[in-house]
Length: 533
Image (cartoon, rainbow, N blue to C red; front, side, top):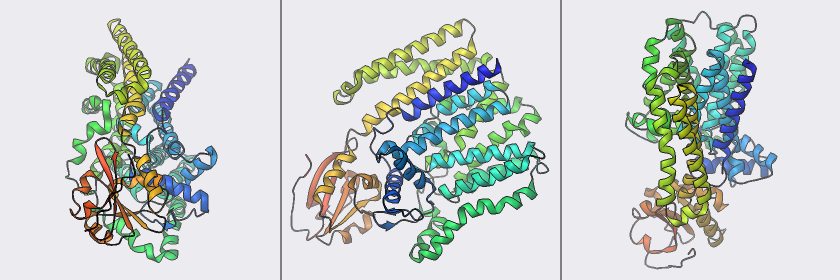
């Protein structure tokens, strides 16, 4: 019976995960600079065989991001035979699905199958986690190595003679995380685990001798790359150093930045946060020092250590979402979630709103968005409405646990539909791809093409070298007639008015923005020549 239940849960999670992460995965244009960098670097590695240093059109790029994620993108291109958005995002999607299954396995070991299944469902409903699983960035891969590191360390605490293999696995996952996103692994793995050991007073269970003896494994997986860059690429040393010491000058946000973005991070799971303090105070001391303490303390440690840095972005917090979902799953399982009125009613209300949102979209969306997939929208409405109705019926019949699961699955289905369909079409209403491909045809190959960093995602579609500039350097860049610059509305208004007169292209781009291709040279000369209609 337990094996059948376990198998049923795994099949359900595989089906939901495949839908959430793979539904229309390649339909959306490249959206961020990091997406474009990973896709272009992987393509260059496959074409030139330069796998040690990422290159963007023969220009070496060394940041605090080692090439681990780029290797996986190149492998995806090679194995699938495709070099498009879908293949570039495939490693992240698979890593996200792996995180879901790993969360289920860890929750099952910490308590039972129910706790693991609840944790995985909560994770599948977290907005930023799902979104990052559908983008070709390093964050989801780092999240997978972070979770595997937590799993290996947790197992090593409870093992005796067989602890060495888990300590070795911990060092391997630590090294893989570092070769994926550099020193970020210190904040997502080492720091939260150290806080947990201090809180739980389990330092006697830590296999210190094994950790020290296997430390060269993780160092060997990472330091060789930094040493190689330092020795073979002297011109990149300053770039490498600046990424370690210059974080206070990047992405500056107020200290409360992450608190304001909690709904964006968690999505529907935001409703579950009040359960954490209730479950923590009701838990026994053994539970607080055990898995519940490990997961909740890890999540809080990552959150607050990220708040200490001036450099802040929401995707930095993706590695804490799986451990937070495990804490929520254990709390719900420990407190007999099927008897909790707040939990069931709040999620049922949310599930009921899902079909209403779909109906609003069908009738209120512009025709050029709505008519493309009205059948899918009505089908999604029917499925979500049926789930909501069935959840209420089961709730009235006293089947609270089943009602909660069905209502939460409806939230996951709605999230998958939103990110795969509505968000995809709304974001691509002004296509970066069309604009970039036309720019590539018009701008001569012997000239220099620049772009402000806010739209560096164009790099994947332009298919030629581009220089990333800031507004302060635009005037000097446009002094030469052999220089071209891509800007969008907000940046366009910040450029000198005389320079704005030399417009070669004006095109819709991303929602309500317009993109412009500017040509350098004497500002008195007006060379208007529209190339994109």
